[in-house]
Length: 115
Length: 112
Image (cartoon, rainbow over all chains, first blue to last red):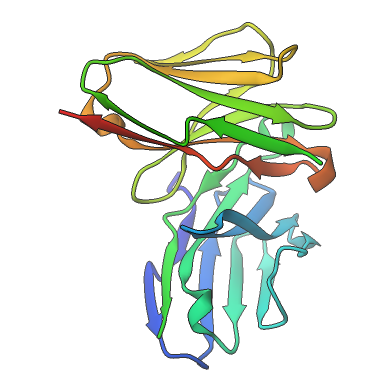
C-alpha cells in the first residue's frame, strides 16, 4: 500500500487567499484525521471522520477552516481566507477498523506558509 | 482531565549509549498506549501497547507498559545518529472520545 498521500507537500500563499489541502487515506481505513503541528502548540487534532462522516470538529480553530470527505478515498481541508498564523505543517492520518483502530498512520504532511 | 506527560523533554547522549524515555498517563478507561518517532517529517508508528509487563521489541528499540503505575518506557540500546528524533507518546482518552491525547514529546539528540 502507498500509505497516506497528501498534496501539495508545500504551499506558499499570501494572506487572504484560499488554500486547499488534499488527502487520500490508506485503503480500507475507516477513520481519517486532520492535524496541525507547530513548534509552539505541538500536534493539534483539527477534525476527524469515521466512514466519511465528520465526528468531531471541535479542534477547528474558526469558521475560516472547513473539511470535507466526499468518499472513502478523499478528503480536503480548506482555509478561506488564510492568515499568517495559519502557517504550520498539516498532517492527515488514517486508522483501520477493529482492534488496531487506535494506530494512526500519518501522511507526509503539507507545509503551509502564509505570507 | 485526561493527560499524557513525557520526560525528559530533551536528551543528548553519545552514540552507543542506551536511553530510556518515559511516558506517564492519566486517562479514563485506558485502552492502549502508542509510541511514534518523528524526524523532520511525519510521525511514524513504533509500538502499540495494551497489556502490562509484555515487552514489545523491534531491533534496538523496546517498550513496556505498567498499567498499575500508569506509565510506559521506550528503550533504545546502542544508539546511532539515525535515532535522533522526537519520540511521541499518545493515549486514546475517554474525555476526547478515544482520540489520541499526545504528549509533548522527547527530543533525542545522538552525538557521534
